Length: 286
Image (cartoon, rainbow, N blue to C red):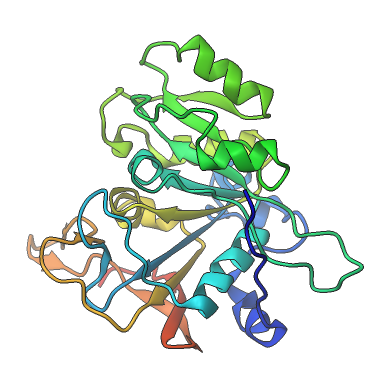
């Protein structure tokens, strides 16, 4: 399996720097829950995804849809090089057979390639029946990526022995996380997910998809766990029936609906025909 390397201009990388985890391990006080009892236990969390003008991720459930242009695609791989882990839900693993690796070329021919992120798959009910032919495992076997850590519900059954063996021989593993075992990724609490990631020595994680995972993380009270949001907006509408990012509606103290969330400290970065929106989740209610 041969994949072309990508380059991302240093000038654009500098624009992203305020929205990325530190290049060196961060002190505990810089985590998303700084100043709380969870502070030292959680990694730096970046939520990043590509969306259409109508906030859609895909034309239909299970349908692979390309939104990012070449420049913003290279940006995504640069972001992967700056995070210890990359997270998607089982729906994305089933629909896209993703590689979840980094293809950014070294900044200099004499430098080693950037670090590969550890793929994290949220799969409470063990729906992902991966094989040796799954792309992420082929890349791990060829040294062009890492084998995934698969988060499963602690209340569920033991993983199939053959799948467990295949995963572990490539350096991956199953990790049990407290949950009810329902098909929804929300069966696992996000704090439990992030604690499990941090306990593996992974100090930063970018959450890429899919729609259910993103909407769940953006909903209250999970949004407070996000350190940075980086969204690629493509100049296209996907239309009704698509897969949308829709956080749960919030109600104010008077019982009336309020905005589900808002970004502050925003920056807009044009990349080709796309535009990248960076920001932080506002800590104040709308």
